Length: 197
Image (cartoon, rainbow, N blue to C red; front, side, top):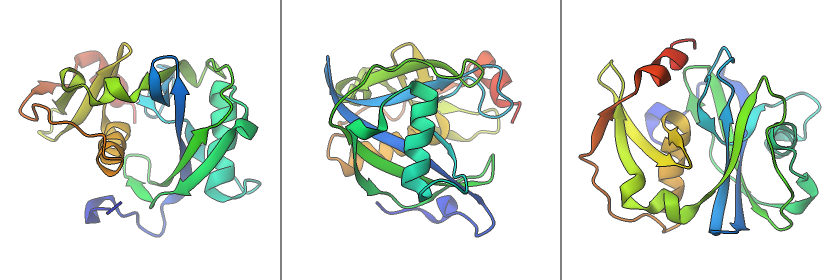
């Protein structure tokens, strides 16, 4: 996976990791996503991969990604086979350098929102829904910046998560042609939550 220059993190960015968990779900191959609680100060209400900061006690990005996923969704980390760590990406809004950890859900476990102050919802999103052209669009911020987005399972997935999903679909060979000219403004409620930080 090639990282464009604007996504390469500076040395002083704080280390974090996310778990990109592939599984075989009831509706075919899927990915695990969470929706962050609307009460959070940063990234409130946004769909995301499970994850967070790498703590001193973690075994690097892999340990952090599995720990955070357990805390946020209740999944059993022992049922996950880690496949690879992907290149670090810069999340400028919170000054984090994020390592995506790709894993296979060999033994799926029940999942549900962990701490209610952090996670509002958990969803296994079929890859078929993510690649469906009807669910793909670009969203525009009032600054004029537009980026990829997905409408799946009642969520608008945008920002860092949508960008990473877009790259993963390309790298995995799952990408399908879609109307990149479909551009919508970010909804006011999403903008209000994003304005917190």
